[in-house]
Structures are given as C-alpha cells and as structure tokens.
Picture 1 (spheres, protein in one colour):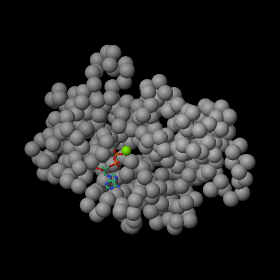
Picture 2 (cartoon, rainbow, N blue to C red; picture 1 turned 120 degrees about the vertical axis):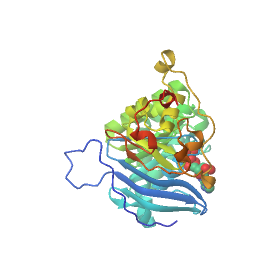
Picture 3 (cartoon, helix red, strand yellow; picture 1 turned 135 degrees about the vertical axis):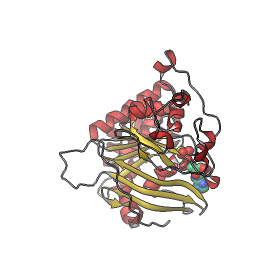
Picture 4 (tube, protein in one colour; picture 1 turned 90 degrees about the vertical axis):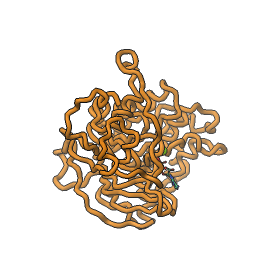
Length: 351
Ligand code: ADP
Ligand code: MG
C-alpha cells in the first residue's frame, strides 16, 4: 500500500459550526482518494468527502460501485494488493501516512466500522459480551477483564439489549440483536467517527427501522460523525444529513440528503431514487422503477461518462466526454453535462 499526496480544494461545509475555533480541521476530510486493486482495477476514483462531528453522511450506489472499498480504505483495512493514493485526514491527521502503531490506535478509537455482513461473522463459540470486551482490552492497557466485561454490558444496554445478553452466544440472538451487538462493538472504544456499511440490508423492514433509529440516537447523543453506506437511497435520505451517490468508483452527485433523494440532479441519482421509493410514495404516486443493466466492471470502464451506456438522457458527446462534479445549485454538485440545462424532457424526471 502506498500513499501519495494530492491537493484538491475541500468543498464548503454545509453549516459551519461557529462554536469551533476558526481553522479547526473537520472530523474527516477525504481528498482525491483512489483505490486500485492489483494495479488494474480502479475501484475508487478521485473521491472527496467531508464529515463534521455530529454529521451523518450517506453513501449510496448499487453493488459494485466501490462503497465498501471506500469504507475499508478509510482505515487502511484493504488487502495488500490495493494501492491507495490521496489523503484521508482524520482530525487533520493523514491515515495513509500513519505509522502502524498510530493506525492501530486510530482504528476503533478514532473511527470504527460496522462491516458489511458483520452480524454473520460473530465468532460462534464465544459469548457476545467477551467479543465486545476484546477491543476494549486491546486498546486500553489499563482495562481489566472484569472492567471490560462490565463495559460490554453497559454497551449492550446502550444499544437496547439487556446487559445479561452478554452471556449469550451469537446463535441465541436474532439478526436484529446481532446487529445491535455489532453496533455495541463499534462503540466500544468511544470512536469519534462510525462507518456503517449496509448495516440494515439483511434485516426485515421493522427491525431495519429500529436499527436506523438506534444509530441516529447514538450519533445525536455522542456527537460522533457517521458514514452510512447503503444501496437504498430512501433509507439514507431518512437517516442522513448529506448524501454522496457513487457510480463506478466516483461520487457523481452530492448534496443535502432529502434534496438528492427528492430531486437528484444526476440521472443515476434519479434512477436510484426511483428504484427505492418510500412506503408513502408507493401508496400515492410512484411505483419502483428498475434501472436496466449493471454498473460497469472497474477493470473495463466505458469511455466518456461511465454512466452513458445506461443513461436514459445521454447526449452523443457523453460517449466521449468525461464529466467532473460541478455546481448544481445550492449546496449540490453533480457530474452530468445536463446539470446546466433546464429539464425539458419528461424522461429526465422519471429516469
Ligand atoms: P460495493 O460495496 O459498492 O458493492 P465494492 O467496493 O465491494 O463495491 O467493489 C467495488 C469493485 O471492486 C467491484 O468491481 C469488485 O469486484 C472490486 N473488488 C472488491 N474487492 C476486491 C479485491 N479484494 N480485489 C479485486 N477487486 C475487488
Ligand atoms: Mg459493499
């Protein structure tokens, strides 16, 4: 894994925190991050992100768009075949150039991850309380096993499970309960940033809603930052303040979450929004609409705008001209040539 430094300007903060001293770095600032697997698979391409304490950023996109790669890159948890360039500034300190000892301290305590599918990877032969206690012991030389177990019980209560469930083995818990355990584990070392990769995807709708409310509550109570990843734009719009939509390893749209969901400026954002309507939308006006085809294989990206082969409103020039993120009104940016063109064609709104 290597790190080089690039300089792209930070995007303006959505709502500057006037209580902070001027010049304080944001909790997380990612600049021009690229991840290339095996020298030939550019899974993340030039991503910029910014998260302040207490802010919830959603990252949306279909399977294969590079969301998990991005999440794992933030804490350098990718395999050695992944080459990273750019900057990942956590409280102003670059994760990509950190020494291993510092990186170990930053994982869990600076930022923690609820991995995609993690609730299925709890160790079957250990009680969940011991599994929550493990990172506490690992990261705090002064913690005794008894103190770590007590803290595990408190963390379980914080995520809505009785402390006695610490004694349970994973198979004794439901899917929703196991996901609560994973969230408790992510909180174990009081991180300032929590990254949750598809935390509700495997859960039924009722449990999904409970877990989302829990995450929201924890973020509000503890003033941590949150990055929540999902293919479901409706879920992210309900939970997050801001949204970044990824396609083929790039952010193609970003802005306030509800605005992006209600009226995306990029045809891919509109397609995602139409594919995941809210319950209310189903009853009233919108039926889910699929987007034909799949995201491209990063090893063989189409030329021009990578979305053009699937785009319902592509111009001839889109096959050859790549698009950078550009201002799209208010606090919004989108990487589409049509952002500058007023919508005239009905299909633009129903893509
Ligand atoms: P998402 O989380 O959005 O589904 P991923 O980050 O998992 O996307 O994958 C993005 C792309 O990177 C996919 O094309 C995937 O096949 C590829 N990829 C993921 N992990 C690896 C890996 N370890 N080695 C090579 N390619 C990978
Ligand atoms: Mg993923």
